[in-house]
Length: 416
Image (cartoon, rainbow, N blue to C red; front, side, top):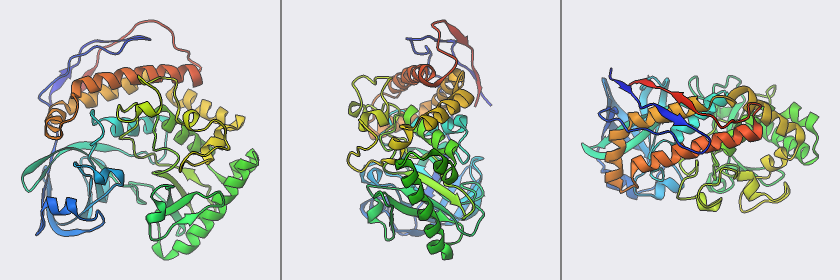
């Protein structure tokens, strides 16, 4: 183990933590040897094509007959592409739990490579039941360096994923932009496109989705009628408040129209929101922040920017959360989630972000050079400053512990 003593950093209302980026920290190497196909061929073909008989090594673990395929929607069109690995058997990789399917997130649009990891940590802080975890790896394909990737379990039903038990348990994605491209999709009474992401028993797809859609349509009707009693009968309100808070804190432009997940564990269960997913263009990403405001205005919220009133719907964005947040009872639920779970924990969030930045420093520098990204250190400093200001804004807007303009010092000793 290497103990890195990070610089004392100062957190103030209008200043970012000051630090020096440490070096010489190793990120695990994931090596993929392809069977009778080249990586260029995989990249040129449809992402859904599966390639069998590949080999993977990660530390002391080695696997034969690994299935490889592409994944993602907009990210698949980029030069640095994301992939899915399916192992021969469920295996715990890097302490993330036993799974067969693993995702390699490319982070092509993220100059820090930290947005997804930070969002997952935020989801855990908020208390999301099935919040994801991940670890960074450096990917080599046929001994050629492909860059820094984020290894995580996919959105799936399973013991170490969304742990559903009922035979009619189902995990559903609201996807108003790509949903119609699926072989099977469902349309709610208000026009939302919903697809089945995973389920407990595929043979029960018809019954499971009939149950889910009946409840989802009832939710839409109750929200439109502002019948909060009916809403609370239909959904796990706290999970919806958690999802809303995560989406708004991260200023995630993908929220409310794609990669938005719900699950229901059979007819006796309510609809739950989550798990939160897809954050590579969130957190004031310079590639998209002009959609919201110049210079990363801390007061901007996804819902405020896209909806002047709860009845408006721009492009493919869903009306559901716009109408929910218009209800005083739901706004109070959001307030309570922040006050109970996040208020007073600013240093924890910033420390996690800084620890992870320290861990991937060398790997991120190599990745930036290969894929010609913007300067990693500058990007980390900018995002760290933005996170600090964003938290202060939320503490003012939702928290009971109002931000005060005083200095707080933290010495962080990090074991990596």
